[in-house]
Length: 80
Length: 80
Length: 141
Length: 141
Image (cartoon, rainbow over all chains, first blue to last red; front, top):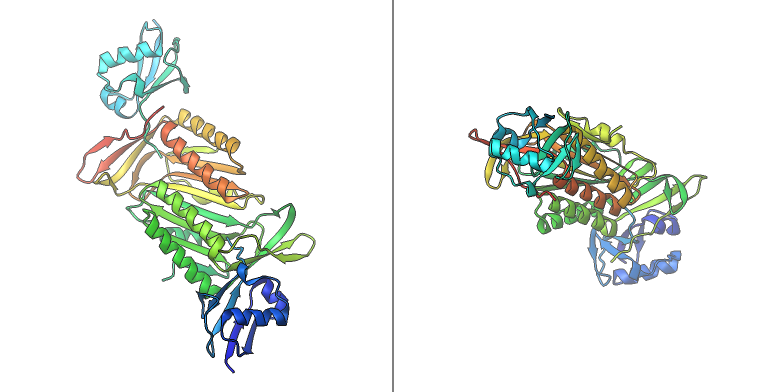
């Protein structure tokens, strides 16, 4: 199975109880991966309030995932 | 006759050929004083493009003048 | 050189400003975001900023490039801090130099507004008394 | 203490900024006017600023007071130079601290716009090649 590098920020890091993770998964898209993680960690935020980055670039939720991809789900930002 | 302390700025200083002047005059108002100075020095600017300050405060053109008053005619400003 | 800096320690603001001094610029506008002592009525002791640094830097750079394309400006730089900042510290700095002031103001405002909605930085407010929480106050499009 | 300074020598801008650091302020906007190397296509070597200092200072102070009354800001200061300034020097500096950025930007813009129309300061541009002339570019109401 493909191995995905995950990094969690802000409340996602608290809810997952970790900042990084290497996860083996058979899901095909970023959207499906987030669904899998919501089931695993109980993430509160719905995907329509978030964005997704693959290999440090914003991508659509339909983005396919490959072995070794680095994926970050982006909660609403609050910098500035 | 009342003696008025005059101070000239920007192009008025150039046209008058001096920066300050003590002038004896019998004119009753700031407006009349400016007319007198225009006749003396050929000031180009019409009063409607200017303001007048008496004793370092903006005043109306109808302001009366007293002995010892300090008068400045204010050309269009260009600071900032 | 990336003109949008993600910094985990205090930055020399004077050096950022120096880099924007161009003889063709007549107006210079800056915005600084400071850690405030209260937020929505609660006493704040400090704020922890977390950034997804590579994307924050590239998205910030994209925002600066957009400002250069949209407004008649000469140069712009920006900086966002990460880590724990006490009240009064500079969390964000933006500088814009332009031939005329209107473009400098408008571009500076554009950049901070876009940073607040698009750059992946999150703040966790620490309150006087000990508790802390992640803030989710900006809308993400 | 007058918060609008007419200065015949360079001013420590960092000290002006320090005076505005208030823990209740979260946004800080500055505007600086620099001597530009060209104006309307002519190469400028420097600008001489002349002020009617007592009125410039009091009118500047009035403008700052208006900004404090009109906008939700915490504190503001400003400085205008007099004398001969070479290209790149700071002619005017304005700083505004506010709880939120919108008021900081709007007040800063208000202050520079009012300075340019109301404060008795005049500039004489010196051009490369030797000639110089008084500029009468702002309308006076």
